[in-house]
Image 1 (cartoon, rainbow, N blue to C red):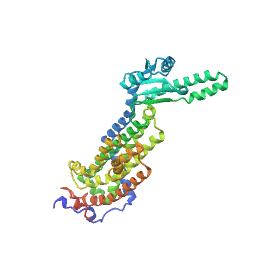
Image 2: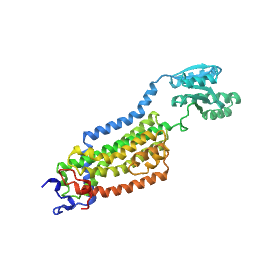
Image 3: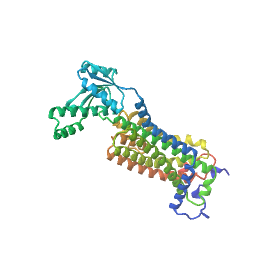
Image 4: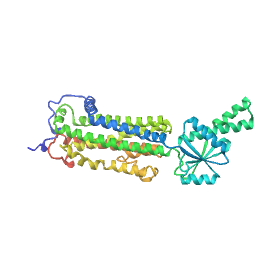
Length: 420
């Protein structure tokens, strides 16, 4: 008789099966899965590469910025005192700048627009420095202008009020509040941290996409490996099919969570340390926490499908072609996310798709990182995704139970879905 006609586990006699509690059985399988996978070269290499990429993402722009050429600043010829203050302060701060003079405001704006200079600096109200830039003002240049602005404000206060202690204290208070007034010629958005939100959104979506794809494939390949080596027959002599399925998914999922958490935390830490990430710590940690939560939900959706489909084949080379239709929504979500979310985070298409369970694990973390996802949409997407995962679990368990002990040719899904 062909191996493909072997009766599934649910139809085989249970005589001789050892009694093991469900929680203990699932825990044993999950522990075994973690111990086997965490020592594999593939897992360690992947973790190292993703961690290195997460560190490099904020570190490389910081290094490039530190080695870039001097900032080109134009100052009106009538404001020689501002030129001297900028040059002296830049030297004290260790910043590289070049200062050129322009006859008037209009000429300076023209030079900024043509790219001849990076910024036009002019005295503003209350000692503040008025900066005109093409797109955005760099953090180091902003710091320079703030220090000079404080000095200018202090000088104005002493000139107007004198140098008595009380007046000096008032002057210092005014100086500490000096800010840089920035005028942008090419306004793309009103949020000065929009670029960082976009970077976090892309990183969250990419990590989610890669982790679900990689770990999902590991689940499917692990099922096929145990099936082809007959290990599964030994395991099912002691525990039930659903316990084996759930334990494998739980163990692999915990490893995947580690693979998500390490790069995410390293990336945020390096970004804050280098100054490349200057959004609030709560926003950064919040984006990471939401990404990890959505990874758990996404893994619950996709891992069950991968494991169930892996149980229907007996050869590793059949896994990729069989699971492609299942990961199509994941691929579509990433393509839509990377092409639409950065430029149009409020897109109605992205909004609706982020509520649907197959797309939500990738799109919703991106929308959260961009700050455009209301709480009610996040909660609704979570409820729908969890309900969908529970529904998939029932079908996945049935497919796994009816297929995992059948070797030979692929088990058709229609037959695998039949009630035992």
